[in-house]
Length: 305
Image (cartoon, rainbow, N blue to C red):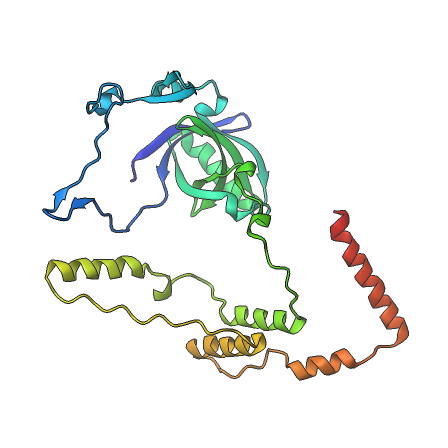
């Protein structure tokens, strides 16, 4: 069982569920230290006091807030733990919402909430089954490490998972990246959908979803330790400049289907010539009027929203 990070309770209306918090993820990446390359001596970070010009032990180090240039307010860990917040000791559920209503960009790391003792077993199970049957997630507030956070509670294999969430003002406006304002045709959209369909699968099991970076790094370390020649890196495939988007989509679908052992011949993608002929056909006046009216209505709706 992973170590307990925090202990408190889930507050669900008048129901209280004592819980312990354990990390739901673990890091398997290879960790490095810093060394002096001339003699391979370990390089360490020493903490020096600016005023006394000497190294300070961890027991003498604490947090402080620079209120003014000549005034620092010291804040202890105990004071941070005892903040005057109702969420300092409890994860307070504020609302229940559909998961799809939450932008994934706001969802961060995950933790398992473990029932703490026999008294927590029944209310914990109740919340698990109620959340599962409702197909909703809970949005809650909690305070850890001196700051209040927003969190999302969901069910994973009969366990409650708490995901930290970012506050709305922590998310940057997408306009900052200046999204392109290009026009794409209906046949190009259909082509992209056909490619997505050919790449759709039911799970994320398989070698393509394994951490090849850590494996490659382990091989480099082992080769250097044994003073062998380093394994050669494969030549990266140079991306070709896309001049004909439809041709690129067709080739991508063929490649994806062939890799899955399916018929590589593409039937689903529309042909450009057929699309042009259809576009030249003029519908009857009545139908055209109806279509135009429909277009105007859909065009106005987003602007007024």
